[in-house]
Image 1 (cartoon, rainbow, N blue to C red):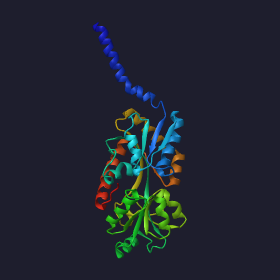
Image 2: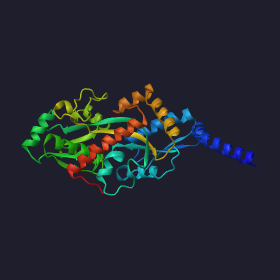
Image 3: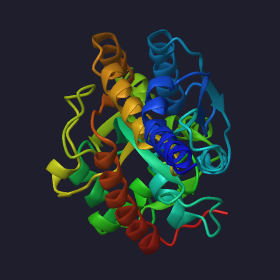
Length: 324
C-alpha cells in the first residue's frame, strides 16, 4: 500500500512538473485574437494586421484582429484585461491605453500595469508639429516668439482630449513657456480641414497621418517630437535640437497579454514578434507608414511603460486636462 501511494505521489509530482513544458509545446493550439481599441485603418490596426498576417502561416493558426473602439482605447484594453491569461487574447496597446489614460480618466476600468503582462514594444512614431502655411513662422523658435508676442492668440487643434497630440501640445506650452489655446475636435478627420483652412494655427499630428499633406506642401512641418530624427522623415528636425532639450512625445505601440499569462507563452510570443519585426518586408512597410520598428524583451517594455506613466502623469497634472 505504501509503495502504491508513493508511486502515485511521484506520478502526480512528475505530471505537475511537466505542465509548463507541455504548455510550451502545445501553444498555440487554437486561434489567437488581437484586440485593437481603435477603428480600422489607423496605426494600431495596421500593426495588428501585420502581426496577424505573419504569425498565421508560421504557427498554422488563425490570428483574428478584433477592433473594439471607444473611450480612448479603454474598451478594447479592458476586454483583454478581463480575458483568460492563456496567450490566446492579446492587446495592441498604445501610449494612451497603457500610460496616458491612467492619469486622464478619473475612473479607469483596468489597471494599466497590474492587469497586463508585457510582451513586446513593436513600433513607435513621433508626432510632428505642423502649422498652416500662412503662419509667419518657419522654425520652432519663430513659432515660440510669435506665441509669446500673442499670448493666447494662437491655437492648437487635436483629435480630442487625452490623445497623444493633446498631451504633446500641453508639453510644448510648458517647456516653451507659452500659452497656445487647445481646441479639441472629435477625431483627426475633423481637425485637419480646419487647420488646412487656417481656422486653427497648428497641430501635433502622428507622423504617418501627416506625411502625405506635408509632402504635398499643404502644411508646414516645424519639428518632430522624438529625440532623434525619424527614419521616415529625416529632413524634419526634432524639437529637442531646436531648443526644447529633452522634448519627447512619441506614440508607441506594444503587445500585452492578460496578467498571469505563463512565462513560457510570453517567451514564445516575444520570440515570434522579434522575428516578425526584423523581416525586411515588414521593416520596409513600416518605413513607408512613418513607423519605426522596435525590438526587445518583455522587461524592456515594462521599463519603458513605467517611465512613460510617470512622464505623462506629470504633464497631465500640470495641464489640468481631464477626460470623462
